[in-house]
Length: 492
Image (cartoon, rainbow, N blue to C red):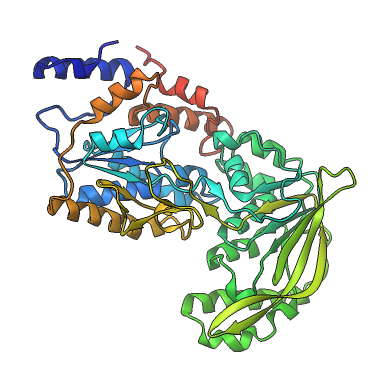
């Protein structure tokens, strides 16, 4: 194998770079030639919203910067592709903005690269002026109660990956042969998974939901979904948009206990505007639910408050879920802070499926990266990683897994500003390498990077497959198949 770094002649190096690019990373990505390259190159690890927004802010404020965005999967867009619910296509429109950025000439996408096995953080720091870790949250918080590992208990994060076609989650086997499912958590993700469980199949089939999940959901017996939270109506984490979608979901009805809203109406006047509107809608929905006549033809979703899971109870076999034992709480305000206090009373909810949805968390990518394990974030100051020159972070791995996609925009702007301030102050050095150097390194270790042009081959194929099913796209959920499509030779 020819290695660029063995050559000294500038002309020879440039010719060989072009040869290697065509041979190993076939596609239309325009690498800057030696004479065009910026002395300041940034590598961003992670191609989700935080990664692309950081790149966008860097290039907007300093067009002389060159950015390489690395991604473990062969496909870009991270949370937008694999986290946004399939019935929220409008949220995915930001992909058009990211596509324009990736094709702008000074922003390069390189997929199919794993940090650790293909290249280390230290090697990236040795190559680039700055490295930004924006790889999101690949794990989730656990309940830490008995029975959590029973068959039938799954994380909402994995369930979302399953219905969105994330390769690592395609072997998930949620138990849909049950009437009742319990979702522990009351955030947007919790409402997403409840909505997917109850949405009529004829509506889901028109989305980009994965074929494997839609085939399973066709046979689902789930008709009753409990969304359970430790606190009360005033503390829910979901947004009014998500609540409205649940209220308007065809073929379903809400169920809310009137006693859960005692005193809520009196508290509304003092709430901030957004929380006030959300609480008013909850209160209205509660009142309307009390007047609706029972209708056995409708599926039902229930918001249950002031409940803490104590144990997930097994069937007699000891292997599968039979239900959840909850402790009933009350709220107590001390020095302006609302605390959850157990009452000693309990409640049992029979179910065959439990989805844990109490939050995502990031994992430490490399031992050299200072990491706050309890909080699940990289230790940083405004995106500047503590104690590691040239290393920065953005998105969930920086601030924690909170907020919606647009929340990453301001966060990414802050990180980009920190980087550019450090550049202006001379706190970071010019790059010691470029994309070609990185490509040489990973190809020498047996990995073929995927360019943005290669991704467009996958994108085109997914859209074609979707047309046959009358849906926007049919995502390829197997990595080997993704690579085959990405690197498929062009027909003459």
